[in-house]
Amino acid sequence: MSETLIEVKNLSKHFKISRKLVLKAVDHVSFEIKRGETFGLVGESGCGKTTCGRTLINLYSATDGQVLYNGQDISHLPKGKVLDYKQRIQMIFQDPYSSLNPRMTISEIIAQGLNIHFKMSKREQEEKVNALMADVGLTASFGNRFAHELSGGQRQRVGIARALAVEPEFIVCDEPISALDVSIQAQIINLLIKLQKERKLTYLFISHDLSMVKHISDRVGVMYLGHMVEIATSLNLFDEPLHPYTQMLLSAIPEAEPDPAKRRKSVKIEGEVPSPITPPPGCKFSSRCVYVKDQCKLEVPTLKEIRPDHFVACHFPRVCEEVSSC
Ligand SMILES: Nc1ncnc2c1ncn2[C@@H]1O[C@H](COP(=O)(O)OP(=O)(O)OP(=O)(O)O)[C@@H](O)[C@H]1O
Ligand SMILES: [Mg+2]
Image 1 (cartoon, rainbow, N blue to C red):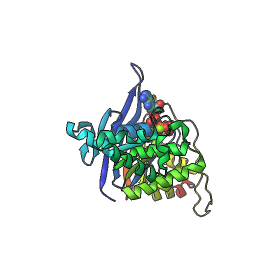
Image 2: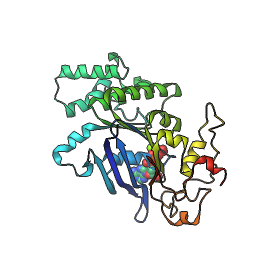
Image 3: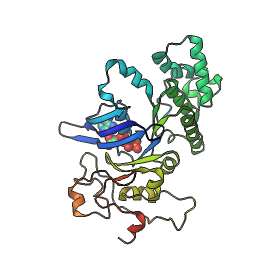
Image 4: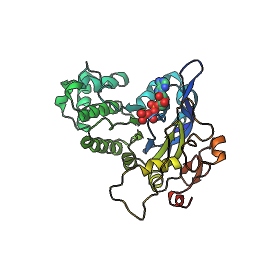
């Protein structure tokens, strides 16, 4: 589990809003994703999770930085390797309805990638599509239907089958359950976990549902205003968050069975997320952080490993239990 599959180095994606304004949706972000793991990416709406996921798989071209996939820079692949790379990576989208072509049958949608990446007879293709539908819990009778005839959960199963068709090794799951009924969410998550085990898949799991991220992820990255502010194993991040922003996010999760011994101090932070077009200088979180000091307003903190496998970008990181004495 320790082999690196993807190395993101100083990745930036800036959008030019007007002649003078630039929105830094992702700004100098670095992290790695290990083969076979689920790396969760969390943060409030607009912090750059989707942009990061899309830039990471070259759907958006990076403004700066590099993404190494199996050690190879994806923005400088030799011509012969581009199709091979596209086969290895897939994306599952938030809204399974708008991502499925309404004029194609479910079979045709799932078979699209097969036509591009594999040479198969019509019969082989039909068998493969049926096997994929069975893998995601759909009977063969769904093959002739259209997306509008399916429920949200069934559509997401089609989205997953379509992604699996090309036998990828890495899948970006961008809020794959947030458009679904709560009763269906667990089914789709369990399906993703089952498929990961069976097919040794690596996931980037983007979500603002922290409980779900905790459940599914091996390691988690926390983004704020285009910056990665903390990376740790799921266990460490949820037990001992070190960045005040992560502490704020976690204190907002309702606990089903609160353990008084482990109860975190509630970290209330005033204010709204600043505009990404005019972020504060220094630490991007400084305008909302109750522990802010002068240095925070001037210097951008870099991500440092301050405990084994626990990285934080904060000038004054602290564990939550200590917070009450501050
Ligand atoms: N194509 C684009 N052009 C201009 N700005 C964009 C574009 N895509 C995203 N942005 C901006 O970049 C920032 C990050 O957006 P992004 O969609 O990556 O955030 P997110 O974390 O995925 O949010 P959400 O949780 O709402 O999905 C936002 O301020 C957004 O408005
Ligand atoms: Mg998003």
